[in-house]
Length: 330
Image (cartoon, rainbow, N blue to C red; front, side, top):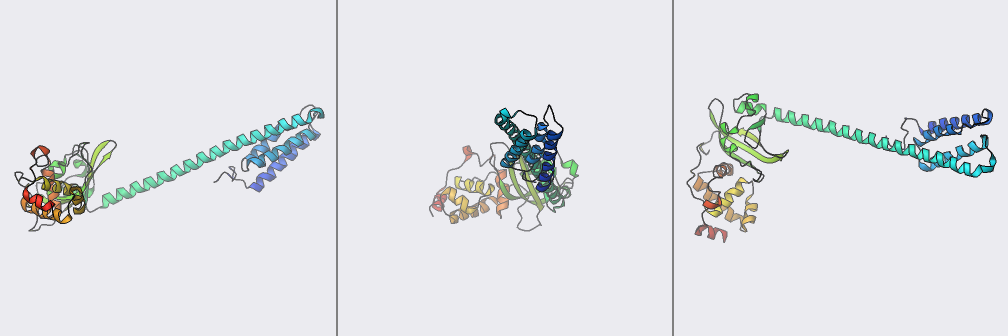
């Protein structure tokens, strides 16, 4: 409801009618009843009613009419007619404007409360839809804190890991998805949004290959990780569950490309960071496949996580080989 509408839910015509009747009654009382005193103070009430749905200039006009009637029918000495008329008109007008301002503020507060309530309803609806989406998802959805402990899990995660849903909460994910527990979680680590293929283990000891799509973010000042996990079908091309050989030495170029893959960058983005061509990046990725025994980029992500504390350390980085120089120069 806008301010131009009556706060009391009256139509303007009805407000004008009621105010007119009130003003006429007050003038009649001043004319027929009053002898030593005036009922002019009662004019404030129809003015307040007018102020509920009319503008400032309408209030000023009604106030002028009330001031004239007060002087015409009130028991006053006409010697001081003009000063009294001006003071009465000013008092009525200012009082009407004050009421109008109060009602305007009230209306604004009311509209803000209505808007807040509408937003709250939308937020609750969105939260409910998100909850239903998570709970009915066929993919396992896990949320981890900075210590790699499970803070949220859906029913699909319980089925995938063969563990009670409530039993998963507070447990370290390292017992189920070791590679996921190794994702950097300190505040200095950058935000990751990527996919990987890694080995998983159910609570009953059964192992499986998992496809994991995960992202890290900051929630209430703390590091969080959310992962969507699905079980990969067995294939001859699958990477063995055992970790890749950590003794394989990677050149600076290979480390840079591997880190770019881990960070979810495309070949074009990696090439832009190295100031080289996409074909050079593709050649380096093929070398990584051969060296690390991987067949897909998602498998390289898992290997990158396993090597974060080793080959990605600057102190142990190897110098670019002659073959790397040739690739970069292409």
